[in-house]
Image (cartoon, rainbow, N blue to C red; front, side, top):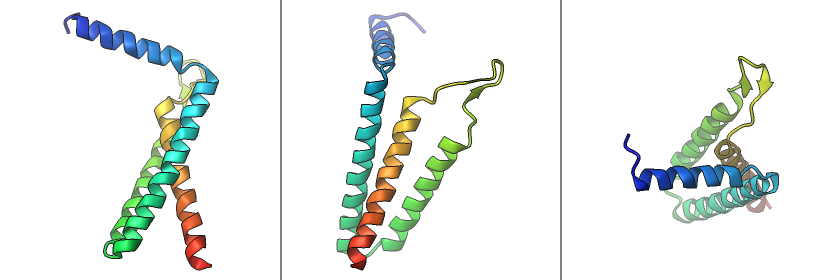
Length: 117
């Protein structure tokens, strides 16, 4: 690939973002934001699906498949370097995706308790 100004800019921005995310507090804040976004997403999906009451089973199937896909992605890899036998930190997007899933499942459980009472 040619080294154009745009490719250099994108490479530099990616490097700066990677260095910015090295700070553990920034990483934790992104994970917490993902958790809250998952909660918001699930509450809104539950409200929309509950209002229409037309596609409840389909939406439930989609949410279960999405949660299982995230579980497979997060927990199926050992996250170790096979050559050095040391732990390799998980990428930030995997932690954020897992936090999003946890927030969504928690919100659906809270919605179920609200409907049951």
